[in-house]
Length: 389
Image (cartoon, rainbow, N blue to C red; front, side, top):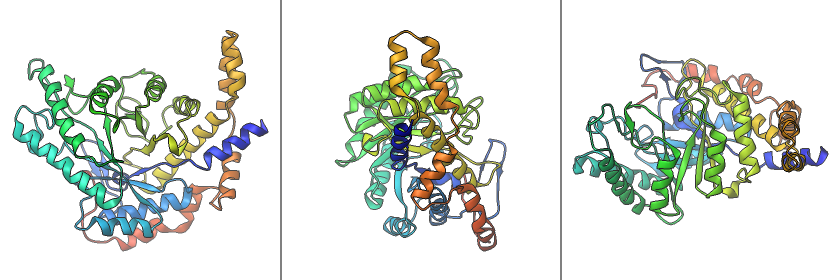
């Protein structure tokens, strides 16, 4: 067990989790967006808030941007601001769901002019990547149809493939196109990239710089997400993993809040397939909206939950597990997994944080800074960031 603990500490010391800029803006349901005091008003303040999460946890050094929500006049200045805060810019996310022209689709739209507009938006995103040092262009396609017969399903896939080829051609060497998928929403009859298989097919056609993004909230109820994780890792095409939690649909709740055992099972596959290492190329990110809870503590709690699930996965006695599996010992194999899951890893994480000179309780450490009161007092006037801004 000592050897397992030592290896777990070593692996946890290299773990990083990217934060989403939009988690630091106002959000809500489709009925109401809820404002909170001190919420960031621009991308510079979002980065300032994200830096607080990194200062408390030590494992959140990158921030994903969303264009046009995080559009600024000078991206060199934004990148320099991030560096001064001790963080950097991560993936650049495109937006294909908030323009009137995209009512019937963007990259799949029947009108070539609309598709051209959507491709041009990705050219802008690639320019942002070059200016900020980002290497990942992240694409979630909201396109789909609401009614049978509304459009030709095959034609939409053909148009999508053509559009993706043009987007892929924009990339520089060292860049990646990360293609996300989603079971449903905002359309309800047929989504154009509804599952990991569709995303993977397009990635395989495009080439090695295209990889799949898996979001834990983007699946039908009961889906075995850890199986999908394993399969994508098996073929070397899992480019990014978005952490959140859901009860019913894409709820974007704090990761591990609804089903911590699922999060452990997922991390078990990540660790077992040697994908936790930074060199694996899998970018782990939070993708959440904090509607009723405060933004920065919500992100800190999520980071801590991922760390705990990862630590438990690292404590699985894989030699004993393999022995039980080969012997057909069903209950013994399950018992090895459950022993690790039921381990209280909080003392191990305290040891990790102490070794890195970090607060032993990131959540309490942030609360003690008084930062929330400071920004509530200072950020008066202007327009708070939020969905669509």
